[in-house]
Image (cartoon, rainbow, N blue to C red):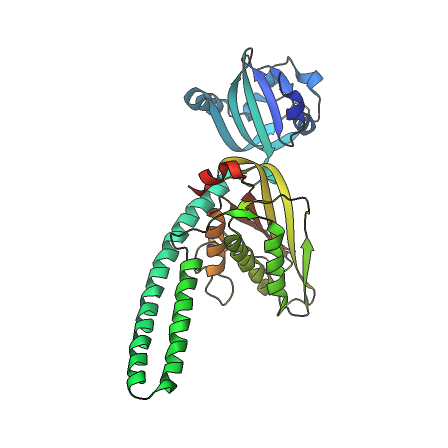
Length: 358
């Protein structure tokens, strides 16, 4: 088959079957997953190596019949060498000298579930509506306060002079600042423009700000991948999201004597976000060794006003919305020993930037 050397360079397992269900090709990642070689399987029917009753054949065939492709998550495969795999599968027809079924999978434990990503997307849409309504409710009294301050300032000029005006100027300045903050933080319809940015410039700004008042018992650790490329994104939006999560992490472990917060960056090839696969994705992880997130909070942790501490709980909801505006996603894992929030940002180049903005 063509492009075999290219497919062998991928970390994702790729298998090709002919129209009769026989193995035609396995890339090196698939050989590793199967713990066997192409020489053993090529020419054999799939049932020679994969237990038929572990494959949802009806769903696969129906997807191929209706759409020419299928997408299946969390499939438990039993192999004839007694190995068991839990994988996320995608497949589609490829026409070469004859039709081939190309099946791609990722280890379910090593990649976020598409269903989870879709659930977070739906949750985020609800969050945005709540935040926009909250923004509207906040901006109305702010406008009233500013208007009242302006009227008071006019009366002060006519009667008492500058003494009161000094305070009315403060009120006007602060209400203007809060109005701008609401527009930026509570997701107005004006989304930030993308520019070519380096993720480490953003994380360094976060580290610099968080270090100013960092308690002595907390250590900020940087674990960066210096090879990450520049990519198109909105730096202020990404900065605000990472800052919110990092400040939450610091608060979560601040009572521990040996508290640590780690900012980690990594590159993920061929990563799927919200059902779309990108050639390269930047992952920023914020990890802390504080207590586990309570089970009852976990399903709704990105909803506004949901929080495990004495705060408004807006930070995570805003962070998720800001990252999803960049076609990204935030997920988390929490255990007794550590909690990790992972921010996934697709590397969007100049050629597709305009489409992504739309």
